[in-house]
Each structure stands twice: as structure tokens, then as C-alpha cells.
Image (cartoon, rainbow, N blue to C red; front, side, top):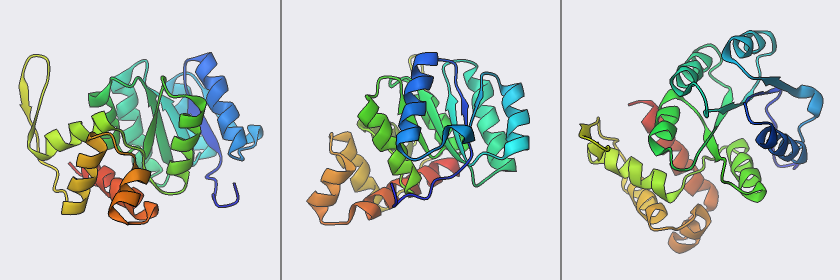
Length: 207
């Protein structure tokens, strides 16, 4: 993976042994040495390790203590703003994912992802892009309109000020197109599409 500049060391705050093993093997494939991987299962220990090692890539499992972990992400970004943070969560938890992006994460992995999908998501993040899928795109568009529906109410939100190309990309993602397919369809290099998606993340963070 010579085209990647790997941020090291890496800290993994995760609670599922099987998924931990899978993600660790993928990181090894990407070029991370095991001796630079720091593991933690709770936030108190993770905060101490963060101060000691200043990890530049942090994977945080959101399966437990979700609000506390979102707050912890905000704390990390204040004291270590250059850290790359990837959250791990269930695919249907779009509001939680949106909250994590607002807190400052660079990307996400779903428990339901295949090994190849996890590999590609992490590689996209490491080269400066940001992953996105159709449900997240639809959710972002609902915020851009100023509202989204929950189970019991319609919540008014500050709209996201999207450019025309960002709006078009989100609509195409909502329709099931991948960033690669969008790049081919509108004849724009993939890195520019990924750059627009990263800009959308930044606008969500600024809400």
C-alpha cells in the first residue's frame, strides 16, 4: 500500500472479540504493525492511553454507551484534532452515525460489512476520502431540507448548505450509485467526488 501514508499509532476501543480480530487483520493487510495497535475496552482507560500515546487512527465501537462515546469523540477532537476517527456501528443506526459525523469522525464501518467492504472503507478514509451509502445520503438530504421524521415526531434541524454538485452527489448516492459510478457518469475524477463527500462531512460537523 505504498500510496497510503499510514497514521500511527492506532487505538481500538471495541467490545466484540470476533470483529476486533477481523479489523485487526485488515489493518495488518493495510500495513499496520501489530506493535503499534493499542487496545482498550472502556473510556477511562482509553483516555489515559490517548494521553500517553496520541494515536493518529482511532476505531471506536458504538455498540455500548453510545452517548458517552459520542461525547468522547468530541473530547478527542478538541485535544487531538488531527486524529482520524472511525466508528463501528450497526447499519440501521443512521441517526447515531449522523451524530458521530457531527462530533468529528472521518468515517464508519458497519458490523454487517464484509471483509472487502471494511478494507475499502478504511482505505478510502486513509487516502483522504469519506465513505457514504444511500441511507446516510437520504438522511443528510432530509437535514438539508430542514427536517427529518423520527418515530414519534418531526424534528426541525438547521439545514446543511450544500453546493449544487454536493446535492447531485447525494441524490445519486440515494439512488444506489457508488462514488465510482458517479465519477464515471459525470466525468469527474473519483478523488474529486470523494473530496465533495468529505466537504459534506465537514458541513455536518459545523452544524
